Image (cartoon, rainbow, N blue to C red; front, top):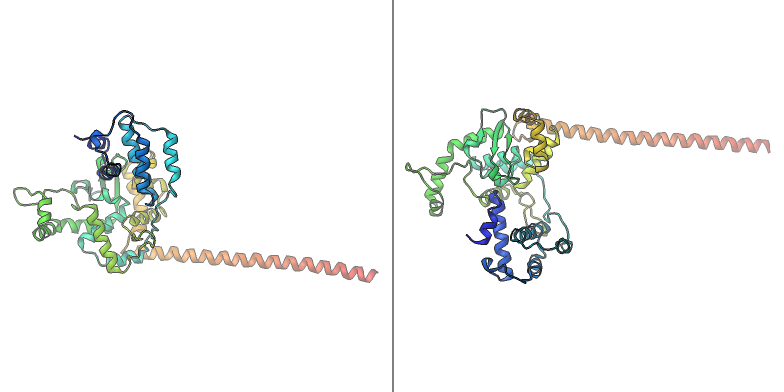
Length: 365
């Protein structure tokens, strides 16, 4: 086992392993060293990191930060801890901390427009993403046995080895996503067999059992890149594939569905519960200490309509909220007008009193 793979054994998330492997291979390619012959006495590791940083310079700040963090952990794991002052200097050289691409969270109508072009697979994929708040990498690792349709609302187990935090958690989906998932699962094997018959590359990718069935228990046995490809095609068909002018990346990438979930679910559900269901580490322990799985499900049901797309109730609810917002704005404008009138009346009364005093002075003089 080479030194990179040994380091990657410290991580359980497949996506983290994949990203870190890519960063490390890139690092050694840039500094022109072989991994297994890298660590030796009196080597200038600071210069190597600086060289790699120069190579990354100009890329999105988050990409640079994640890449450098990976190299820092790799060096530390191999007993080469560089001074904190050095890392602070590298960090200070990087301009900005946020993602460069401007995101656009879709409206209810835009999501309907996108999903109107989706087949059974696409509809199940993106309704599940939107109504669960999970990450794409988590969704592509969900097994059929992880879904509990008998639980109300439908419960999905996200196994520890597939999460970003390394902790198992549960999330939920509404009736729309659950119905789409059931339909997809009914046709999943037929779809996969049809795909396999058309593509020899897929035949090599999937294993089959003795009956010729695909040996892959995942609900969606696709790669993350395939999910993004499906989404991008839907955006093109819906004529909603606007790109960021600077990065040339689509503003409505699949991750915006997770943002849609957080924004809308938090209208009716406590924010700590929403964050925990999404798998944000700082909230997980506290939420699971305060709530049982059943109670978390009850909380989810309170916000289900806020992340529903095709039910009339969700439309009515959002229109009602928009109407209330408009009414609040009108009331606020009227209050401002009233306050302004009151101020004018007060000023006129003061002016009138001053005029009376002036007239009084004139008559006495």
